[in-house]
Amino acid sequence: MFKRVRNRAKWFRSIKPGDISGGQFKNSLCFKSISVQLADFNKTLAKEKGVFIHAKYYPEVSCVTLVGVTLEERQKELVDCNFSNHWRKKLEKEGYDSSFGY
Image 1: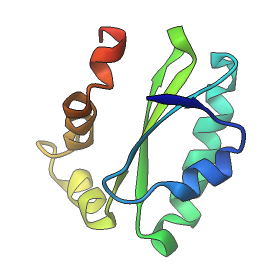
Image 2: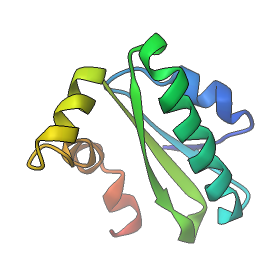
Image 3: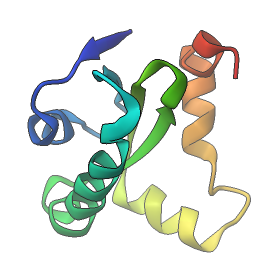
């Protein structure tokens, strides 16, 4: 379910709308830089790729899960508070949240 990530930019670019991908890292100290890189991706390449990427961090096990949503879904998240966490439901459905007992 979680695989070692060696190239973050390549990992981000591999995500398509509807994809869920779990990455494992040496430790959780890199989460801040991952967050910055992902924010940069979402600001610059999201329109080109047609995907906005959300991330869920699991610091206790040094893992991150990425969830790709369409740009239309992202716009709906920004205006409809009832829809803002729909991407988290995808994690639950795929068993990612239950993997760590959250």
